[in-house]
Length: 224
Picture 1 (cartoon, rainbow, N blue to C red):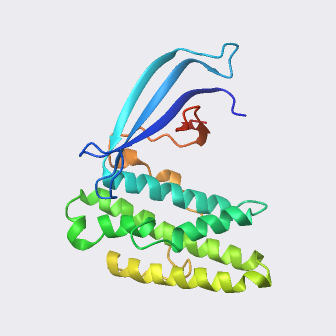
Picture 2 (picture 1 turned 90 degrees about the horizontal axis):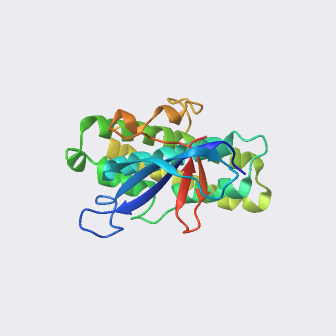
């Protein structure tokens, strides 16, 4: 249970065409921050909201936000005292073994290919590139952790993940016009992705924290 919380964040997807969801090139989201007059938990079930602010993220900012979260999640799973193998493998699979038009590579193709990157501010493109470098490194570290901990019956699965990872690095290297290596030779795995904030590229008051489920099913992030 979470304690001493008075700021909450929920996110609403939208597109400029009016639809809620679209391709990564058109997907925006609105991040709303609510501040209450008292800390949760409180003696009353309902507490007055004393302030509300919203920030709209454009498509490349959504990509920056989502990829930053992926890097943080992978790093956190790899540095746990007792590695949660189920969660680690699910994250790995969702990172390196995804369909052509989905997952992290969809962001890379949409915003980092040379002809498409020209449409977006240079500082946002550079930031997304740096996050992809950290993402490539985090995936490599996660594969190493998985390889150390799996049993013999998962060796073939590990090789499949490794093969997908190499394919991903190969495509990323072409898209970013730089060579990404299969081992953490250039980037420090322990570098904190929390330093990569949307405040560097927009007016967003980026709130990081744990996810709380609202009764409506939407996600709330507690700023703790």
